[in-house]
Image 1 (cartoon, rainbow, N blue to C red):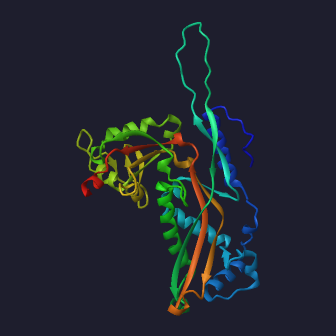
Image 2: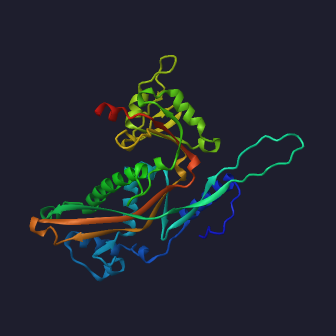
Image 3: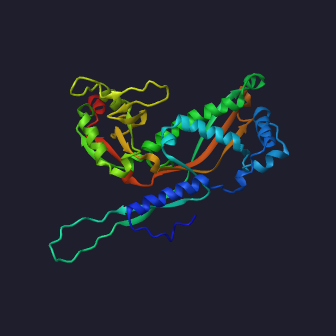
Length: 345
């Protein structure tokens, strides 16, 4: 998949190319030594090792060379699905599998419109295009399990590890995907979007501001646009009534389905709260937020490190990065003054 020689002349062409790339990744069958862990024998040997610490020749093909093993393909799929359930951006964004850093074309600057007197020559300006790169950052988590728990035949170790790791990894991912500073972790989406407007304080936020945000987004992105807001913004806006005294919200009556505000789907995350950033609302088409999973996840059994405490450690790691590949697809509202911080001072 070589994009280095690709010529793009407009944002419309760029959107088309990004959609084509996403479809290519969705149908790609990445062939690496890390993908040969699909058979039942490997999965059985993998979890036997996690239970007992015993290894077999079957595990050799999944060894990472550092005492850990690649997660079996079927278990990887289950873990990714659980991560998706825990991490909002994995549900809304586009997940792709990569084996190297991925260069993606992006818009650097737009051409400008100009007035022309009748009969005068046109001065052509062009949109300029560059590249962004989906890199890789390592995220790891370790959990401890007692010897007694492992000896209990009733424990579902597969489900326990999947739940424990997905909760921790998903939470760490979501924080980085929203507000990460790029130092040892991905750059958060709040640093990649333009603010459509600023409000003085969160308490001064109005429904008119939300409408202005919606229409600051170009029409092609509004069709699939959703709103992500902080818990604080949700609590504030949830109380606002329309001119006839009715709530502006459309509450969901189906478990797991999000509410709607002004007919737009709304998701809530604590990672847009004022303690993390001054961007309480994001609105746009988040299918242009690409999450690059590099290779496969690894799990290592730490048999000796905690033996004196009657514990066994399990360490899981993954490599991931994420970028908003079309920044104009998402806009934000920013707050000039952090009320919580001001009150604390």
